[in-house]
Every structure is written in structure tokens, then in C-alpha cells.
Image (tube, rainbow, N blue to C red):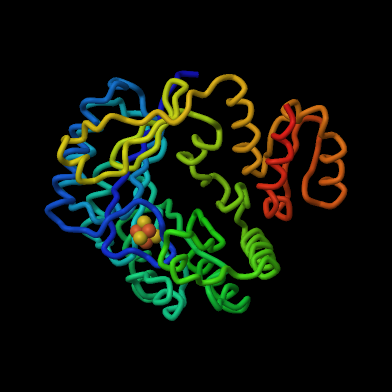
Length: 365
Ligand code: SF4
């Protein structure tokens, strides 16, 4: 099999910071977005990985839909000049409903984008306001229709559950509305209160554990009954539509990082580009990347365990440590995991305690 890499590009701008978010992003100023796009092009063209064949491309953020059509096209031109994208299997752009337009969507399509990931989060206008989102339910549905009418046939929507004061019937309504739109892929996240977010600073409490658990299992039941595979802790797909780019992360594959705050893994090194947009623009994209970790054989085994257990296929049973047989048996007896001749995998109940399971399994050398 010929080797290829994936490409992640970070667009760290948002019109306004959402109340639950602690990602690296700064408020937009259009001039700044353009000079950032130029710096990104320069960083791409100066890549040490020049000439590599690219398997997937992912524009994440932040809000990549804030890039103008011209800037987006310039970045894709830089990618095409530097890498071989002729066999690129998936090219995703993340977007927010308020910044999608038919014209921008057409540009994406013309530039080779074949998958859209849109942050809907909820269809309740009251919850959208409380989250600090800029769109409404009506705008989210309209943006979805615009993407479809332009020709996108692979759309992923993000939904959040366990929102402040959210009830189970409200979540059920969100799930039904999602299913009615019939996206190919859904990512559903339980809201975690991050200390650096507005919610964190205001000490907004997280939904209690029982409610989180029942919302997670409800999501699993409703979406799997509607024909979606629950193939990863937070991800659901119609058959044939699993996320290929994220699949590279979960399989320990290589991906290059472009843009301030982007993370990469290439030739055994995990690294990131410093999360400083101003410095990134001032240095025309040539910020020295920071090495986070050199991945040796032992670390690679640990990664195979904790990344593999995120997936419904789980891990090869040979990766299970000898000393953990009775722990594994107990998990299986209580419905948290399954063990076959070849594989060990978590169930939906098991996904809820995956952090604990992984910690236990990796605590043995
Ligand atoms: S959640 Fe997304 S859109 Fe909202 S501030 Fe964070 S990165 Fe920006």
C-alpha cells in the first residue's frame, strides 16, 4: 500500500467566542484573516513534506467559513503546488451556519471539497442563545439546504447534549430534527465545562452524571435505530460515511499541521504550531513548530490502545496486558465490553467509562 499523509489546516478566527469554548481562536478582523491566509500559503509552500501524497485534507477551527472565496482558493492552490492531491479521498471544511452562503459553498465544491462539517449544536433557539452561538434553528436548517442544493452529498452535523437546563425531551427533539435532515454523519458531544470558557468562569455546573449517562445512551439508541452506526465514542455515520480524516488520527496515522495552533504527527514526532496568530502572520507562517513527543514503540502501543478503544471495533486482543484478565472479564460480564477471539471492544455503556478503562489498562507495563 502506498504511503500518504493527511493535512490539517487551522483557521483560528471566530466572529464571537461561544460560551462553552476554550479552543484557540480570536475575534475576526477581515484584514487579519487575509494576511493569515497569505502566511498559511507560505507555510504550506515551505513544508518539509513537499511532494507527499495526500490522503485527506481538513480545514478546522475556529471558523474556516470566515475565509473569503479568494483566500480559500489561494490556500488550496498552495496545497496543490506543494503536495499531490490527485488521490485525496476526503476534503472537509468545518463551517458555522451563519457564515455559509451558496456562493461560498460553490467555491468549496469547485476547489475539491467533498465533505462539510457544520456546527449546529442544538435546534433550540433558547439553548443556542445560552451557548452564545450566532445562528438560529431556522438559519441552521437553511444553511443545510443551501449546502445540499449546491451539491454536497457528504455532510456531517455537530450536536451537543447535556446543555445547561436541557431536558431529555428537548434532546429527543434535537435528535429527531437531525434525523429528519438526514446528514451522512453526526458528531454528538456531551457538554463539558472547560475552566477557561465563559461557562467555566461563571461556574456554570455540568449536568449531573446520571443525566449525562441517560442522554448519551438515548442518543445511541435513537441514532442507531435510525440507521447510523455508532462507530466512535462521539461519532455516528450512515454505512460508508465514517470520517476518513479523523480515522487517520484514531489509527495513529500521519498528518501535517498548518496554521497557528494546529497539531501534527509526522515521521514519529507529535508537534504543534504555536497558537499565536499575530506571530504567525508577522513571521509569514514560518513559526518554528514545537515538538511535543517522539513516539517510540512503547508509546505507539499505548496509543494503539487508547485511540483504538474509542472505536466500536476496539483493539486487537493481543494488545491487552496479561495482568488485566480479570478486569477485562468483569467489564464483559457487566456489559461494558466484548471480547472475541481477536478483538476487545467497548460497548456504548463502556464508552461512557472509557477514560477509566484506558487508565486501568495502561497502568500495567
Ligand atoms: S465553539 Fe467553534 S465557533 Fe464557537 S468559539 Fe469555539 S471554535 Fe469558535
